[in-house]
Length: 352
Image 1: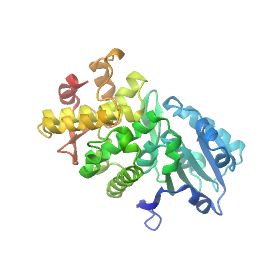
Image 2: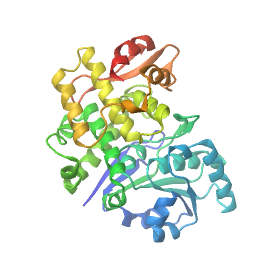
Image 3: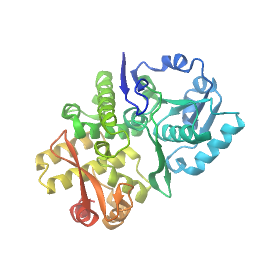
C-alpha cells in the first residue's frame, strides 16, 4: 500500500516536498535518476542495509544525539570534499532523525547548498516528525537543534518494512511524536491508542500506517500555514520545552521518551489553567504509559525541578523573560501561549 502526501514549499509552488508512506523504498531509483547522489547514514544503517548504502558514495556519522553537532557537520563537509561532491551533487540521508537532521543541514550549507536532497526515513520518529517539514538542525553544548536552517527535502520515503529493524525502545520513542500529533489537532488519532497496548498497536500494520499518515498530514497542514515557525507551527512544539530540558539534564532519555514526559507536564499545566479536566489528564498519562513510555522523570536520577526549569529557560523559544509554551485545550486541540518564565516555573515546578 502506498500513500503520498505533498507538503508545500515556499518559493516553489510547483514542487512540493513529496512524502511517500508504505512500500516506498522501490521508488528510490526513479527519484535519483539523472542525479549524482551521495549518501549520509550511520553505522547501524550501513550494517542493516549494506547493499542499499553500498550502491552509493557515502559518509557514515556517529550514533546518538552527542554526534548531532557542528563537529560532525565539519567532518561530513571534509568527507564530501574527498568524494568530489560539488554543488551539482544530490544528497540522500538514509537513517533516523539524527541522520536526516544532519543531512538536511549539510545539504543546505555545503557550498551554500547542493542541487537537492531527500530522505529515506528508517525510524518511526523520522517518518512522523524529524524528516518532514524542513527543520534541519544540530545541537550546541547540549542545547537541542540550536543551529539550523529551514529547507524542505524533495522527498521523504517512509517504508514501513524498514521499521522492522528498529529496536523496540526506538519504536516506542517514535510513538510519542504520534501521540503528540493527536493531541495537537487530531483527536481520533489520539483515541486510536486508547484501549491498546504497545504490542497490539505496533502489531497492527493498518494502525501503524494510519498513525504515520495522520501525523504527516497534520504536520503538512501546519507547515503549509507557517513554514518558518512564526505562528501556528509553534504548536508542533507541544511537550518539547521540558523534553529538551530532560534530554540536556539527564543524557539518559531518547528524544521521544523525553517528549512523552513533556506531554504529561504540559497536560498538568493545562489542567492547572482550567484547559483540561482531571479525566483528560489521566487519559493522556494512560496512553503514554500503555505505550511503555515514561510519564515522569525517574526520581533516582536526582535531577531537581530547579535544574530542569533553568534548562527550559534557555530554550530557543524563549524571548527575553518570556517563552512560547504550548498547552492543550481539550484532547485534539493545542494552543500556544506566551507567558513569563516565572509563571511557567510556578505552574510546572511540582510536576517535574
